[in-house]
Length: 266
Image (cartoon, rainbow, N blue to C red):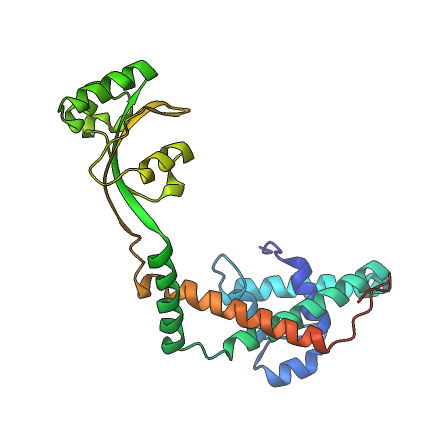
């Protein structure tokens, strides 16, 4: 049974770029010849590695044979002389080589643990000095008048959590209005602004309106945002530092290049 042909443009490009005899000499055993053109084990293995689904060597070989046959027919039909096709091949060739250079550049970057930990310490200092999180409870009510009545009861010594259980229409009511820890951006702005303005242990003396209704807020505590562990962000830091190194490298090579646009700008 003839296998389905997948990633056809990529395969045709790969076969058209390589000088087959040289490729065979450099990259291992020849597994098949198609009208004299060799397909090597290295080509088959490379194709298997590029697939999202597992393929056996024989399946991959059959697909490469099919593509080589189509490529040869296309050459006979003069498809490779079509200006649009030639342009696509040119751009694809440049893309493959540029991607290989990019991989080489990134592979050679020396971003060791010392550099990563130095960046980590720098970043967590920013977080610790600029961000806080807050622990609060709230009672959500349908009207301003109901909220004002709750505030009067609190003024008279009522327990906030018990009032929340009895009167709050929000889902946190059954838990005494407990919202846990949150950063300001996680809440509606009018709510977070009101919560931040409170001192720990105090509640809002006027109702706070949001699109959900009217809130009475109790701020229980605040603290600096707890930074993530080094191990949990190691990969993210490495990616970030690699991107910065690449941007710097691109700026350098662009700065040395002569780039002329058709409108005369550079």
